[in-house]
Length: 211
Image (cartoon, rainbow, N blue to C red):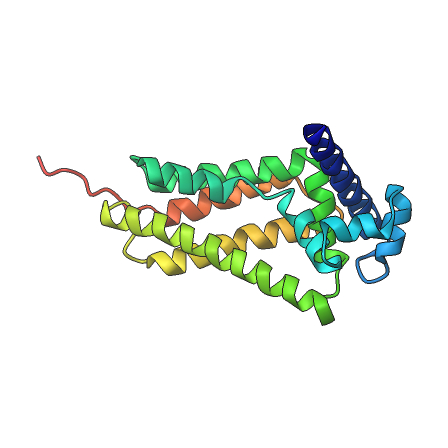
């Protein structure tokens, strides 16, 4: 019975998140109340409060559902060791473009994050936590670039922290523009080419061997 109850509770939680995702996407975060979400999910407000303290916690749980794979890929590979950190990071960025393009749920949630939420009042905390996640991602990239520097693969023109900041800004800008302006370009094609050109600049030129 306990196992069934736990499964039912998780099913209810997912129904609440599905309803919140749908309403946030259509009406925006500020115009959607917990009562609206409860009605759409077919549950009571008490059921929502059982799983989430408030709208902020629900919003953050929605964000957790659709994280892009780049950071996890890089952290796991760095922990295991990787012969070419730059190639690893470049591939992880391309996989993030593919993941966003092929997953409509990710697209909806990223639309909510970029276009459907006013980060004021209680939602300021959500912005602060997104900033923390962004900083963590940038630090992860910086460690990868530092490793590439130590192995002599990173161009001296690119300090690791500058390379990491440039890359995260490129990624965030391309994805935000693609979401915000109606997918007017091929994100995988443009993203892959843009990242490829940037990594060509990142890589240290190999000096020809003397005969």
